[in-house]
Length: 284
Picture: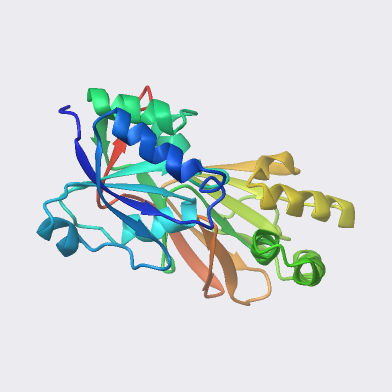
């Protein structure tokens, strides 16, 4: 495709990779490739751009150098836009960037963009009433560990200790979730079920734990977004499914790391992203 020469850039100073001069390096990478940064938007101090703002400025490519949560907000907020979005690895785990570019870092991704070695794609995402997840969705009481991650991000030691205790209590004593339709897996449920969207559908992995040590290890894996380090079982690939809370309580979910709540029964399906993303990875 034709190389891109002008972009708007969304940054988030709280994201994991936006520290230690990473933003200055990104500017230098763009300058060396004659890629003009017409505007920088620092979220959340500034609002995310709208389609009308981008169109009025004549911008047809928005680059987002943030974590997966901000990426989710930026992308879903631009559903229906005629332009395209360049995902850059500006967070801690960068799961969506890996979907689009493999293990490539910013410099290599921008090389590909500058040479036209990319294509526009609309990847499959996970959808529920609470919203869409482009990189991954988690459900169940194990999602309470998200509050621990926020305390770690803020370097709040007192809050970290409190949130860890509450997350462990919720994960061990909270109401588990299970597949209702189709009926697969343990009928006693699981503390956490992970949804991973791909072109094949929604891959479901269910996590179980036998003792508090297992719960702590699984919680630590959740904090690092390395879920499959914990004991788990593969439940299969689905286009649509229904989940239920074993105690008829609300279901907690994380959409690309951001918390939300669903009813005691919830439907999840695979759908296509509703705006173009730029992919440079082999196979796209």
